[in-house]
Image 1 (cartoon, rainbow, N blue to C red):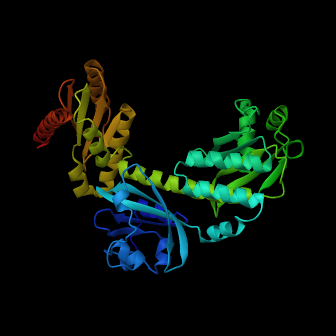
Image 2 (image 1 turned 180 degrees about the vertical axis):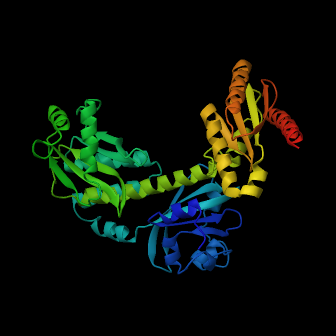
Image 3 (image 1 turned 120 degrees about the vertical axis):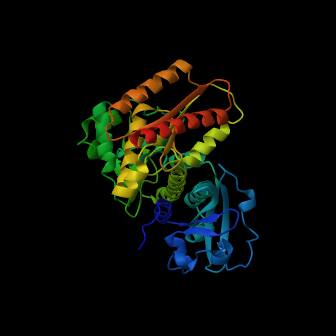
Length: 440
């Protein structure tokens, strides 16, 4: 079975439905496993070369409700759709992404049928249910996640009569939690910068204890935090008597913690907190997925530097400008020979070494624009500074026994970007010609 592309793994990791379709032709590029189950597809072959409206809606022409005409880059289209064939409601978010040079429609969908039916039932009932409906609507309909979360945290603090409500999100790289969203009741002191380094360490240890749990926990500071003395004392100094903590967890995926300080009401009623957590998790998942796809559309996976798509976007933005700019064109010598004699794995290892070598020298934009070609783009740099960087590059290259590069550099403060690129490329080409003449 062929290995999956990174974007396929990302979409399959999303708990809801998701697919990619060509923005111009409507041809399906990929349907995640959750949506495949809905349309009774066993794999890519069941929908390959089919139009999205054919495979997903059973239609012979584009859907009358298609969002393609209103989609634009850096804009998310939110809408709700009832699918009559499977009799389910979906809350949908459509956006434009670029993959392999094609503009695609990316659609995420969360099945909100059960939530919608529940909301419909409780809208006529009690204060708690009315507050739950308000939270659900904000998170479903509000495009700005930060605003939506702030509104939800305020509602939670109101319902539980708490001094503060907050979200700690997990950084998967450092495995640490950090407060990304906080609501503080008026006249309540912010809980900020009062923890010692030991207190910060204890906070991380304490919060991570709740990972893997699915229930809300009411923690009494005097009783439950005695094993964390620095944290215990800091909380009591701020008159924090208890904390209501709920992990943001779905299956084995842990996103962080939602919590409230000094809860005075409804401590046994955690349904509102759980439902708010459910909606917040869904939104965090969508944002993380879009972020990963955008990352993949700009980054060369092999070397970790920017790719040609990003290079084209950067140079297009500079096309009408005349500003100080330095360009370094780089061609990896001998890559084809290594691929032909030692195999592409060794060739890939060479390209990775080159990528790491360039990243060790330049913090500016580094792009891999072809199989063995790299470009470094230095904007708003002085001529002397650019010259110093070139000297440093050549000096460092002399110490690299396993890397041989042909380098073309050009600086200008008056020419347009296309002219600077062309001249740097020509210099690099001449250096490469001399290299191959020398080794023959």
